[in-house]
Length: 195
Image (cartoon, rainbow, N blue to C red; front, side, top):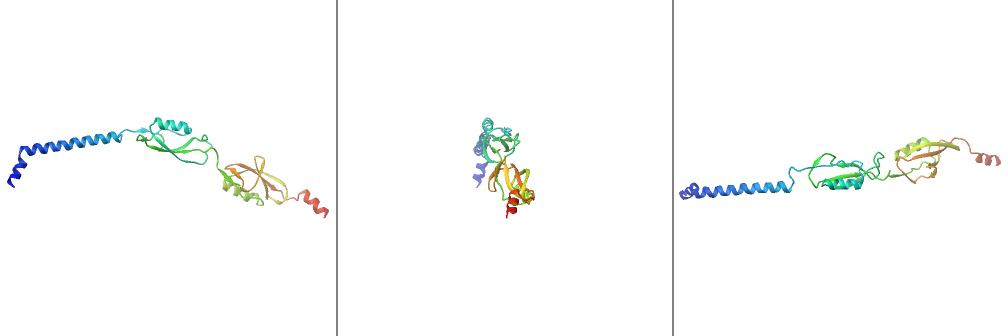
């Protein structure tokens, strides 16, 4: 036991201990520097502003910034942005991110999605307007014709053409309702008089 303590106090042991500590310090220093370089520690890229860029322009901006992208969805059509342009991105423009980071993109579709015209024939104009508004269609005009059902919807028009319930129209389309004015049509009067 005395020999062991004498060895711990010996010059040979202290030199070996010093060399071992120096080797550990050098290895830790090298490992930290390697990790710093491998992970680009402290090196950031500024996320470019992609708003209103076309998909091709967005790709170039992403590649120039050495980033990656993924289109996550096409949103509902926004008329304030060009068709097929970028309307949203995550992370947002100006953020600092690591090189090769993925940017999530939302693209403006080519137009409004289509909605189904609800069953509004033989429904009052007031109820028909509510039903149309609920699916995203707007009543632009109401035209009255001689029909006994006052304010009852008889026909639907879109851009001057007749449409029927179940047809598909772009959301926010402006349509015309053709409703009865509460009078008996002349043809029905003539038929009634002849009987």
